[in-house]
Image: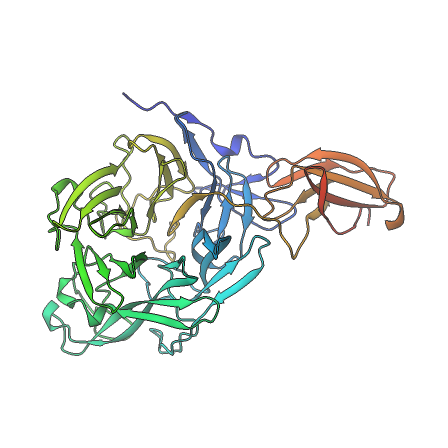
Length: 503
């Protein structure tokens, strides 16, 4: 039976956000109190039950590269720094919710996996409590020191108070097994486990030490591997998870997930075309995949989820989320579910993730394709969110081209409660009206307007309901100054600065 979608394209219902669009470009929002320019969300629902939560993602595109949190009605909640960023996600650190994201000054895409940066961890006041920035004395492709040495692909906080992060070094290796020189240049993928409190590196694993280069599905062409500035991306590690006392790491270009034990050895390999150490049904085959995660782990079995891009340079096969049951005793894989929108197939050639929601729905971010979809547990599509023009070129996105697409390395739908601690509400006056917002606040339901001739004479003159990210209010003509208070549960959380009404 065909899906029946209820469209709530957001430009029709956004509170006071102005919608801007240039010819041929996806529309974006603007505000009077802040300079943020998040994309407009086009949201379509079937009416079936959805999980609660905000959209937590890092849209990268022509207007703004900030990590953002947005409501499922398309309103902005929080916009982070306008830098190249990836993997904004709510996690738990020592039992407390935190917000983390990777950031770097350079543009990030699937073509430049060796971009270096740091992971910022914020508390629920948006105060940075940890900056994960190991300097491993790596040398960047241009020959300069890397500084903070983390790349964008992983920043998972574990229950043991550590963080799993990915690093790409550039080094020499023998490439004769893949048709290259005996002394070639490669991306040396590795992951680290770092104690967050002490910044001590507790564990390091290098793919080159354990995996033959000729297991890659990447093709060595042209000048690949001939210089430091153009290393061969043979492994492309893009996720790491905790697996018992060890780890599960995923390689995009070997089409494999590897179970790593606590001493660094490989216990088993799940490969997407042959099964590797497992018998794999054809319906469960995968390629160029991202975001391998484990659930329900026992000594004899586990459930594994991954985002199956199924494409590399050219969009050929529809991408989908895969849920697999691994029998570790008999080395057999069973397909639990394939989460694919068969009526509106999406072809992702890079990035993306596949996550379980609190109500057992599943959420898919399509990486380089600016779409997110929510599925019911049985695989039915319940919501489609679009935040940019869909790609029409059969090639990797290039930020230097005239046609630029939005994309998000990963995206999540999560709960988050926060009240900014360092800054208060932002207030401005334009065209004889007042405007107020509080970037990141999730608690405020009303705004109290205070006005007077002086600070000592400020009195409450109005209360207005909060509407979206930015709310307008009337300006009293016979007063000199105003101040706005953020209210939740009849308590003023914080007041804005005092603003002159007339200059």
